[in-house]
Length: 73
Image (tube, rainbow, N blue to C red; front, side, top):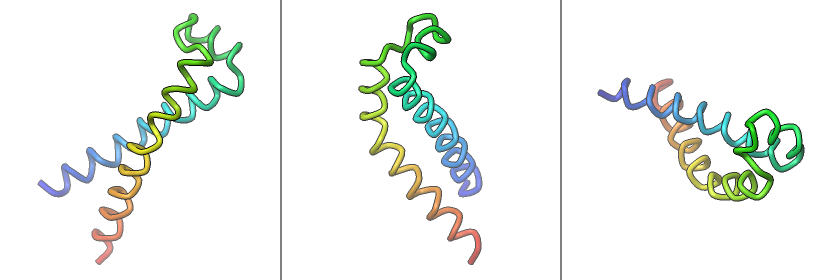
C-alpha cells in the first residue's frame, strides 16, 4: 500500500509541476499561451491558478521528499 501511495504522490507532483509551469508561462507570455489554449487560459486565470496552486505544490513536494528519504533508509 505504501508503494502505491508513493507513486500517486510522485505522479501528482509531476502533474502539478507541469500545470504550475504552464500557468507561469501564461502569466509571462499570455498572448502565446492564450493562443495555444484557444483562449481558455487568460492572463488573469493563469495568475489566479498559479497563486492557488502554491500550497498544494509545496505540500506534495514535502510528501515527495518524505517518501523518497524514507525509501532510502
